[in-house]
Image 1 (tube, rainbow, N blue to C red):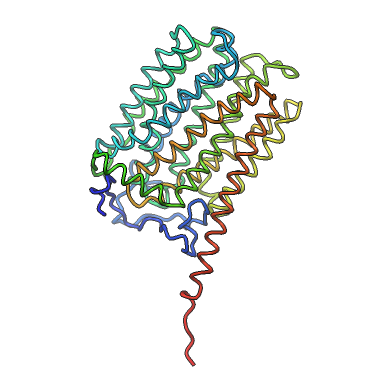
Image 2: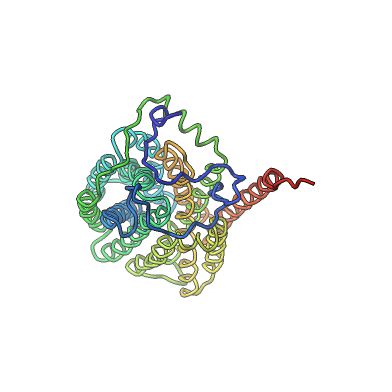
Length: 455
């Protein structure tokens, strides 16, 4: 089936895409069961895609880093402010948590349609339009007269931001050499972590002095600057070919991706990792504002400086995979997250902070590994493959925000941690299943690969 038939983009590849046969002994076939990557090398002259040190790579990296900053800063701009919002507008923690869940839910619902638009009109065009709408709504959010209106605006903002994640991943898969893909996506994810951190820290301190409305307005202005710089810096795509907007083509492409068990495992892993992260960071502000901590809003916002750990862990995901393999990197990410959850139960602030550091490091490493594996696995319709991952990922965020808040409201922080540990157990179970499936395929293919000895 040709790219035009599937609505996929056509790329000029000097190297073949990662195989999808799970029996491949290199283990690259199972992206949820990672393997070691070959050492980076200089691309062949015939490969005109971007690579570290090559033309346009730095501009591209900075542009997408800033897009990631704007996306997460806007998407989670109310998360550190939930105690103030619920106090100002009335409602419980679970009521206020809808200002986060509505944004991530809107993104989850619209990411697939937006990816289809990017196949037709181009990655850069869709990303630019998405940021423009999102920052415009961001400037309206501070004027919301009631909690329902605020939730509605946040849903629209999330839907607008849906054009960023899948289009960015597809852009990188088409414009960057395969060996640099994990590192490039890691830098985009690092921008997410910086945006999430700066948004929460800035809003925390600004809100302490001038209230939550001014705080989210400041984030809107920061996002405007990021959006303008993104559009000026991002190189024009060179390997994109417009596809079809026909619904039948989109449905066929989505069906193909969902029929791939390797992609299904990755989608589930992304959703479960984000369930942990969304639940923890939605509720942590409430926990730290209560006894025995009783921290002021500015200090609660500063807690999100631990996102810097995520910046490092996501940006170095490529090296982690090269040493441990993708499966090993996922196991390490899940284990690190679980240890962090358990440490966060302590009544000691330093221990809670250490727990948040480990949760953040484990989450961002696992997310970078899983999302980059989606781009390497999809043989066509990369934007749709990435969109399905992002949809699952943000469904996990919405579920984590809502369920985590309900658990906290009914049983305290220990209940929220329990939800997180169940999600981590799901990640481990899925990765083990991938490990066993790969082992079975290798065993089944062993006779075929063993040369016959004649006597």
